[in-house]
Structure formats: structure tokens, C-alpha cells
Image 1 (cartoon, rainbow, N blue to C red):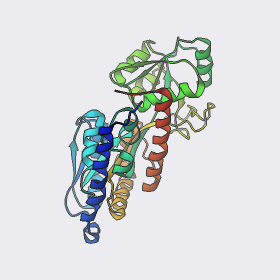
Image 2 (cartoon, one colour):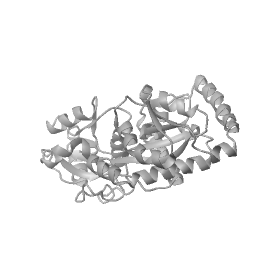
Image 3 (cartoon, rainbow, N blue to C red):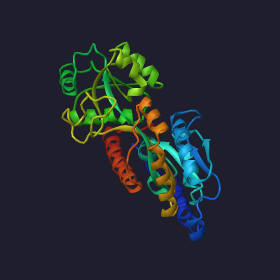
Image 4 (tube, one colour):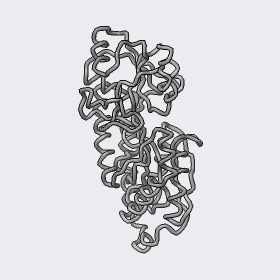
Length: 330
């Protein structure tokens, strides 16, 4: 479990006044004139990844609406925390933004020690894309529904293994939550990425794998995998015949990998609203929607404040899951 150390407390104390003080440098005139020069968008992962590809799609429309260039910068390291911290410490003027995944908003702070808290250091702008998690099984497992799986696991303790692309991910915590909710014994097998875990599922080395459809779509269409349930509030267009977790007897059970945009805390509301509107307009364009459909992604329709509230609720959920499971990456 996460430990609160003297070093962490000192780091947090040092960061807090810095975040508050920097807001004084943004004048109403500067906010009204926003944007008047290019905007840095820091992506805290290796270049060429999902977040960068999403932003390159959105940037075409966003640049037209904003009248300025979006300069994408890859800043990988420390599970995305290096790039995220750079944004958290930047001036709150709207010219340094973050585009990161769920972990950097709602999970990392509970599984590793960090010198900042994303809940207070960042101002959420928009959820730019979302990939619903689907619980897939190997067809050799004699189940076709989630309820049948739970019954099978109870009757066969120690015989059901699930794969995850890495520890501390949404995929990992989704399965931990399922174990905590049902009390069934499921054995975790971590892999080095989704391709390796997918191959293990096809070979029946593992029996379950929660992952987005795009990562395994060809195998699913070929009948090599069974989709038991999708972890969304409503059924998704790409899998209209697959029931939700709620329909399978687990109301409120939602889990997805998503990517969000944020600015440093203290950024004026007017600037945040301008950026949120630019994202929303970009998500509605045909090129973005067509590509998202191919990738099995959703473009959530929600306000900036709804996004912020969603992060808060999800962080509370994963914090509870981590604490109950005594999960730590240290």
C-alpha cells in the first residue's frame, strides 16, 4: 500500500504554494487573448503511442478552431509521471497541456509514491478518447456468460488465470475489483504488453483477458475468443450482442482505458472552456469518428465539469480497490 513519508509530505508542501502563486501571473487581458502563440501538448509516453496518435487526429480540427499550432512533445518515464509532473509545475496560462491515460489521473497516486497529487495539481479539460474494456475468455473454457464464469471459477478454484498487460493498469484493477466483488479465486498473470497476453489467451495459457476490442478484434472475429461482457454502462456499437457487466449481474461495474487532456491547476476557466470546446468540435469531425470506429474507440460527450467529476469518482473507486487488495508497485 502507499506510504506517506516525510519526503513526500515535504514535496507536497513545496508544490502547493507554487501552484497557487503562479496563477497571479495570468491577467484577464492575457486570458481574453488566448491563444496567441503555439501550445505545447506533453504526452508522457514514448513517441508514436496511442495518445500521440489520438492527438494527431484531433489536432487538425483543434488548430483550425484555435488558430494556433499544437506542438506535441513525448516526455516518457516513471509510468508517465515525469511528463505529467512537468505540466503540473508549468505556468497556468494554457500554453502547456497534458494528454495522458487513466493511470496518470486516477491510479498512479495510489500504487507508487509521487511528489504531486494529480487531483490538485491538474485542471481537467476533456476526455479525448475512451476504449471500453471487454472481458474475453478462451473458447475452451466452458462458459459463455460472466455469471457462468463466476460459477465455474467457484467450482474450480485455482484453475482460472487472467492476464494483464502490466501491473497497476485499469485492466489489472478491473480484475481485482471483480475478485473483491465476487469472492472467487482468479490467478493474476502479468505480461509485457497486450500482444503477449493475447497470445497466451489464444493458447489457453490464461483463460481470461480484459482488453479493448481493437487489440484482439481479428482473433474475436475468427472465433478464437469469447466476449463475456463489456465494462460499460450501455452496450457499445462495435459489440452490440455482448452484454454489459450490469446486465450480467454487476450494476455500476464500469472500467475503460481513456485518455484525457488537462492543464496546470490555476488555469483560468475561460481558457479551459476554450480548449474543451475545441476538443468537442474535433471529436465530431468525420475523420476522427471514422478512425475511432476502426480503433474501437469512443468519443465521450461530456462537459469539462463532468469529466472532472468522473475522474474524482474513478479515483475513489480505484483507491478503494488498491487498498483492499494491498496493491503496490514498490
